[in-house]
Picture 1 (cartoon, rainbow, N blue to C red):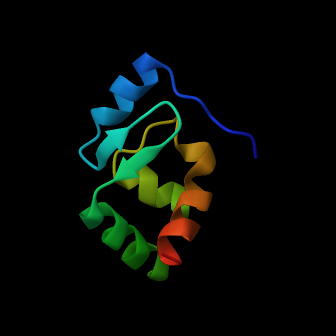
Picture 2 (spheres, helix red, strand yellow):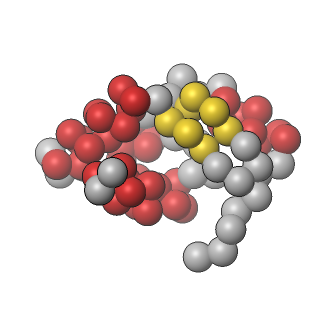
Amino acid sequence: MGKRIFTKEQIKMLLANKNVVKCTPKSVTYSKTFKKNAVIWYEQGLTPTEIFRQAGGCALILPICHTIIVLLIFR
């Protein structure tokens, strides 16, 4: 998977999500609460896409949400 670079407009959109604490052109940082909840929801059987949609995840993140959830679980 190649590196994704977010534009200023995309960063603004991502930062509008209450679960996003920080966003740069190369990374998105999620709140600790969201990270904990995402792991719980994943263990309860929700798919990564369902988790991000329920949490107000935008379409920019959905293509990489599975990778994000896997990283959250193993941190």
